[in-house]
Length: 118
Image (cartoon, rainbow, N blue to C red; front, side, top):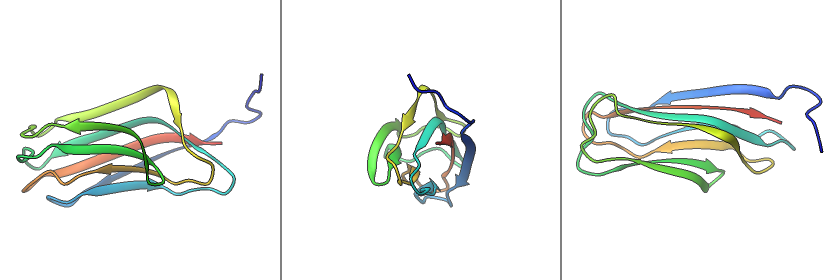
């Protein structure tokens, strides 16, 4: 059994899209370390989502590790929230990316991601 010998470096990243644009927030890779994602959130604001679903993806570099959908015509304030009971472990030397597709005319997507690095 292994134990952490010191507390990991905890962090949060947040960002907003511009209207009707995709958005990605990133926690940069750290040499010889892994990011562990503990929670993510995507929130719709500005206007209701258009006719197409909005994909929300947690990416390990370019590999999708977790995905959800905000449905077409979702109203302002609709959110996807995930607090992982077991953190999502990403690859060594990989960036953590949280992505959301464009939501339609006037739609702004806010993304939040929390985790730690060890």
